[in-house]
Image (cartoon, rainbow, N blue to C red; front, side):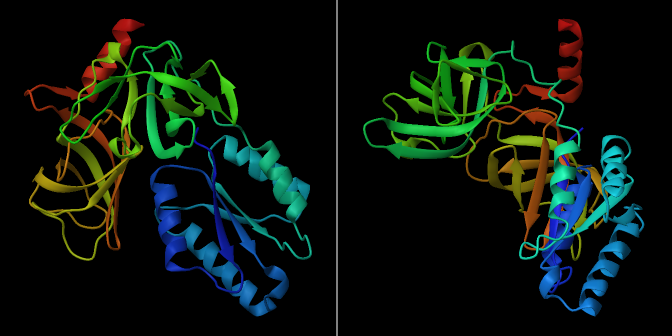
Length: 327
């Protein structure tokens, strides 16, 4: 079960366009969601009631169909926490104030008892795979990258590759040290965040979206991929040559639609879409979630096929069959 998402709404500002966008993405990704209405101490009663009514109307709308519950007691907190652990049919609404402290204890209690994220799917025995989401230069240390271990275990003695570069190539590297939560460690495992100090690599050679992987993986970068997508919002239609920005894990790059399984798609439609990166190949994972955007256009999807430059491809079915054979 994914972690619940918190949507914060200013009582005096009401539900904004950005609030609806964030709620739409959270619901599309099937994340349990709860609401925190802030600044209730400075908001007139009629304005506060209007904000709560608007939130209630949104969560009751077709396609969401949740039951709003304004949390006023510990009993309400327990009811909401149980719902989060099962069907998430209840949408908790906390009315809080940082000035008076109203309902803050109830919110803390809720955060303490909601179920933790399950880490059953993390494989610490697989080849290491570290996704970079930031880079630094530290005086006396050199180039440092920050990111998250997606799977496997990584140490300073591991045989590692860094990439892909602008040509889609991976290059061998050596690590100086590893830090986890500001403490030096010998290794990091799947699910942990860390920073890695890399030897003899300049910071301008590394970008967000690159990976540090075990050489046993024999990684490949792809220029094209096919995804099953759903359009959350678009003012008109999406067709061939449409160019959104695609986000998947730490990868972020503009893409072009090169094929669709129908003539065009509109808001609410689902389709198989083949994208092509406009600038450079990227390292993607089959089965990974993605979000694409362009202006106010928003869409989500799942990567179903990766198409490599040598003509080979990998699909979700291939990955599932491989997992079953290993078990």
